[in-house]
Length: 141
Image (tube, rainbow, N blue to C red):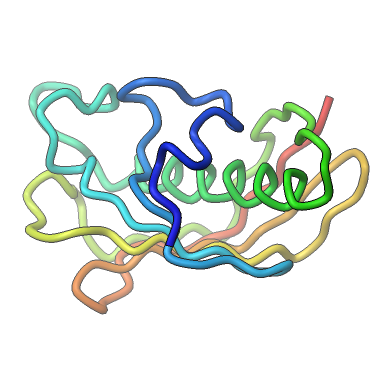
């Protein structure tokens, strides 16, 4: 298990915009992270006091950033910065997440990685129930 202090300096998301709290494990293909930031009043994605389910896509995207950064670090490199360019086949099992008790489990699976782009599938669970799933693509610069 890696707490935030072991990887947050590797990604561009800073302060409260870093939504993930811990990495429970990762391999060359997968990452499993956990977060309680959906329950925090200072979550920067809140609007009108609500954190909507669509923001789970950002949790999935941040798991990609952390995974890529950890893999790069493991080989003595730094991850290239990137831009989220595509979300596909996203499904939601809830309409909002700020009212969920307990942590979110964020799972990412690297489907493809090249020098110029990454593609991942992501899945977010709450209390063992899938509440969001989809695919995302990042273009590296």
